Image 1 (spheres, rainbow, N blue to C red):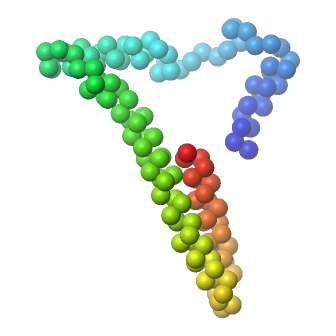
Image 2 (image 1 turned 60 degrees about the vertical axis):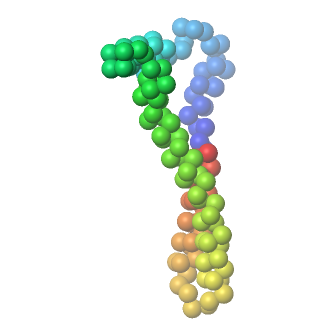
Length: 123
């Protein structure tokens, strides 16, 4: 399901072998030149501000949003397993009470499935 996008690439590779000319052009922010230019700019800014280039601060400015996104994803992935037992307890309580509405059981099962699906994508 998640690798459906690879079907066209595999079919193309079966018809004709890949060559360098068949590859697509990378986005500008994925090329090493962009990273090199950005790091040079950040190092020059830090040199102007502090008198000498600060590699650590420049590197942090360069990758801070990528690291922040990865940290948020990791935190979400680590918190979700704690919700599993709580939802399972609610599901067991639902099954023990015959007067509970049916939609509540479907909702609890769907939430459990969704949370663990999100966890598998986030890790």
